[in-house]
Amino acid sequence: MDNHTSNFIKDRMIKDLESGKHDKIITRFPPEPNGYLHIGHAKSIIINFGLADEFNGTTNLRFDDTNPLKEDVEYVNSIKEDVKWLGFEWDNLYFASDYFEEMYSRAVLLIEKGLAYVDDLTADEIREYRGTLTSSGKNSPYRERSIEENLDLFSRMRKGEFGNGEKVLRAKIDMSSPNINLRDPVIYRISHASHHNTGDKWCIYPMYAFAHPLEDAIEDVTHSICTVEFEDQRPLYNWVVEKCEMASQPQQIEFGRLNVTNTVMSKRKLKQLVDEGFVDGWDDPRMPTISGMRRKGYTPESIRNFVIETGVSKGSGAVDSQMLEHYVREDLKLKAPRTMGIINPLKVVITNYPEGQIELLDAEINTENPEMGTRKIPFSRVIYIEKDDFMEDPPKKYFRLFPGNEVRLKNAYFIKCEEVVKDANGEVVELHCTYDPETKSGTGFTGRKVKGTIHWVEAAHAVPAEFRLFEPLILDKTEEEQEVEGKNFLDHVNPHSLEVLQGFVEPNMKESRPQDKFQFFRHGYFSVDPKLTTIDKLVFNRVVSLKSSFKL
Ligand code: ATP
Ligand code: MG
Image 1 (cartoon, protein in one colour):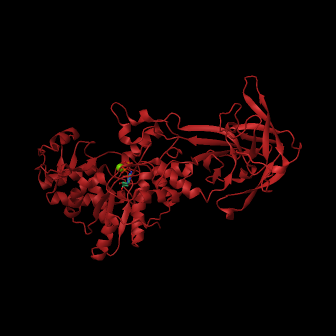
Image 2 (image 1 turned 90 degrees about the horizontal axis):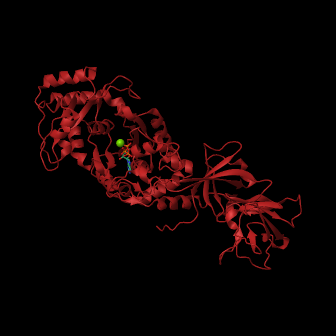
């Protein structure tokens, strides 16, 4: 697949292969199934799968499902679909919950080695005892329990003899370590909750910091790639692998997470947008989720190219959302058929065109890609044009239609505006124009020139269509800007992020299928919505407009 240019993770892999530390690269993509994947996850997917591919290694898709309260099979299924859609195939599919028994016995091993103890302090007390960056922590009064007592209590925790939060299992490391993660971290907690995979078999669950290194080691992962927030946890990661006597020693490597302007990326926030009705689902086209972007009309190629361009580094500044748009435009430019769609119709009668006559005009499907061939479009006496392609009283340099002015109808004839018809409120409802048969497109007419070209759709054969136009979901650029004092990100949700318009498209569009993509003349790239489109009505989502100020 796509080639990653040189980066520190790749260099590390090359070194480990050359030194003989590993003879094969094994990576994993480990989502927690507590939400849908977003564009940030795409970065992690592309790094993990992409790098393993480059070295003929393997990649596991592993569901990190150790927190039963937030997890659901709906998320498991969506994650699988999204990874596949992005173009990746996992070598193995695993669930962390399948390792619960093994994790339990590794915890017992720690207890037996005097390296873990059952603590009765409450969560608040544990936090208080932990100390701060500048002050050392203090030992829990339960820290010196005997191995026998700990073994007994831990097995009773498993049997369900205690309530949620009554006891935890903690690693016994160092309460005065400068790295707070090493101050006796909690490694098991009690949670009487049904799990999507293991049902009611367990009422104790391992904490991420304990579970994750074990999962990696069990799967013989060689390079455990994660985001930089986990850098301070690396010593604990290594401690767990070593003290639990795992045969395999994975190496944790951190990179900077991907952030994009004018959106939010954490699953917690995305879930809130869904739950509180700001959007209509995880796959709403305004969401930065993979399913939302797919529905909007993004292609896997455009997402992959974007992610590759953002590179792999330790930093994590926000990338301009216009860069994403740039990549989808680039990808669709030669692939998407071009067509005419009227999103705000104004009726035009061509008074000197014979009544009842229909002619079929030839038009190229994609002027930048002639191999796509041509299409036929009907023309007759009544057509629709775009409302804003007409002005009764235009400013200077307005070259489209106004009374007395002549323009070119794309792929058809010159027409001239002769008369404006208004309703009782003075609103323009119809134009009467004349056409010049000499000016037919493709005949090489050079008699005179017009400055404006506008698009149109023949009225009798036009197919009604809905157009959904989007603006950024979040008004402020970065997550820091969204979190200024006294506000949270919901205060920054753009109330005008969706505009729905009813118009018309060319008759040959009738056959369009969900997710088919088109470039509508002047309006940009659109994709057929897979959920809202019915037999009677085509619904188009605008992927992106045509112009951008963005420069790479
Ligand atoms: P979120 O904070 O959005 O809920 P998460 O990190 O909790 O994300 P996980 O399901 O645990 O979500 O993530 C799976 C993998 O994807 C992890 O390895 C994580 O580091 C990576 N990942 C998540 N968000 C990003 C991001 N914005 N950029 C790069 N990688 C990411
Ligand atoms: Mg998480």
